[in-house]
Amino acid sequence: SLTTPLLAPLAPAPAASNVGGEPLCQPCNGQEPKGQEHEAMLRSCTRLAWGQLASWLVSAVVVTDADATATPEPPHIDALLPAWSSDGDLRGPPLLSHQLPLHRLVAQLLQVGLARGMAPEELLRLTAAQAVVAMEHPLRLQMLPLQLRLRGWSGCGRSPWAANQFYRGRLHREAGWARDMLLIQVCALALGPDAFVARLCERFPGLAAGTREAAPSEASHVSLEELLWLVLSLFKDWALSGEAALRRDVVHQLALGPMPHSVLTRRLEPRWAEHPRFAALLAEVGRRTASATGGRYALRTTLWREVDPTYPCYTAEEAKHVAGRLLSIAPHRLHSSPGGGPTPEGRTAGAPPPTPQVGSLELPPSCVPQLHVAAPVLQRLPRLGRLLLSPLLLRLSSRVLAGVASSPVNESALANALHLLVLGAQLCHAALAAAPSPSATPQTPGGAAPQLPAAEAAFLAALAEGPAAASGPAAKAAPTASVIACLWRVVNGSSAKSMPLARAAAEHCLKLATSASPACAAALAATKQEAAARVGNAASAERDERRKQARAGRARMMQRMQAAQAAFAMGDGTEDGDDADGRGGGSGRAPPP
Image (tube, rainbow, N blue to C red; front, side, top):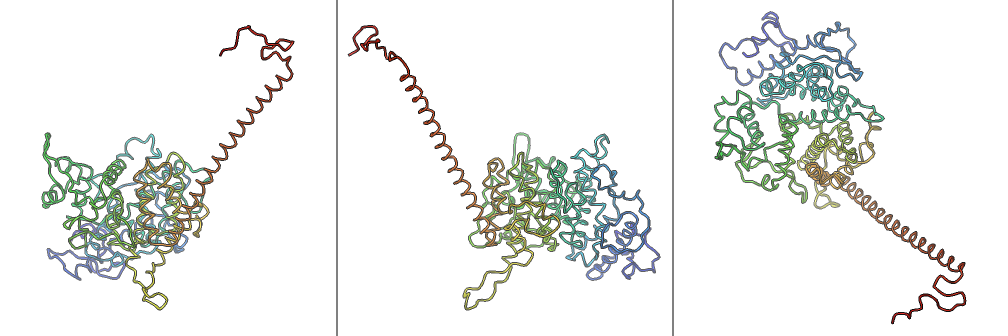
């Protein structure tokens, strides 16, 4: 009933059928459909909305995919969506419209289906070519912050900045940004991990797959940071709605620090203040404390384990502030608190799911959230986890880690890369914990170790061997050092003390990788041996240098003594005060007793 008024002007005659051959959706006439009838109507509405969107995309987006069909297409209408300019001019594409009614109608229908437990493929099956054109316009909207950072819109007034602020602000976030990100998530599933990351690299300057700049520019560094942040944001639950979304937003706002009720409501979406459960949820997650300036609400200690420092609605300063507050909390206070804490959607009440343990793995640091907190979308779309294991994404992250030795360090890009690596290691660890152990044999009475799936095993092998060992067009552009070695440098490097958050994340990633993969453990041991050898060589070189300087000093002293002796031998013998006849001269006074 919600979509019928919007689709009525676009729909053909009622007796017609949509592209999928199913009858068009009809008004509900005040009766709520239930069960299979509701799901069938939802599928019909989704396919009808996609049919109208696809007909618009045919003329709005130029398909450059080599695998696209060679059928003749109508001429491109540049006014609908300007053709992409790949010449490096960020201001080439003009400011795009932030109003995408058909895109967001499809995303809203997908959101309803996901809330009912339906898979995206049940509602809409997209080919790779369809996914490329469907996500083109939403993807360009995600690039506006990058264009603003690189001053691509200098001299254009406040319009680009205001458009970005409104798009990501609390007034339009749910109706715009969240639905665009949900549509990009579904398109990423249809494209596949490597094809999706390659598409992102084509849209961000200086990151095209297979290219390598002689001297990386500022644009490439900022582009890499923004791309990793976009990928990290894709693992958030953009389809979350209702009371669960309200709880998530309130928890993350209170994580910034105690705040009055009026400030909290101004920072939330306006509709949340009128939610019937707002007061009860605030009393559940917040603790009211009295002060001289009025009451303030602070987050309950048992709920800090629900806090994600990579929450996409945080600014960079807010994310760093929350991560610092989390780091100051002892890990056992987050991961071993009693029941009644956070219950992610789809799970039963009680204690949160424990971190998969292998051997004597210690608790993660407080600033590193668990997998169900940092990547909640994997509960809805588990196949999206393959994106974390993408070899191309790993090479992009390794480029950031390889630059830690340089100065200055881009801490935001480093944090994004480390969070993605930790998520990938946590995913491998969860797969290892869930993998069935092979049956015992006479050679292995206790049973062999669990076997990882192929994708997870390849990811851990790439961590140990280094991105250069992987195949692909961008393999030559990857750093030669392994990711394990780069992580060890983050933990023990000269800048480790100035970056405690990065050090904690890198240390936890090393623990996860080495406990799940013997190859990673061997790579870490080899890295430590090389470092010890370098330290020993450096100490030996320093000792040799000191000995060399001492020998040089003795040589100079001997030269001075020889010069003094030669001067004495060539003199007339009066240097010591003797007369010419050899008798003692001088003052004539007796020597002192």
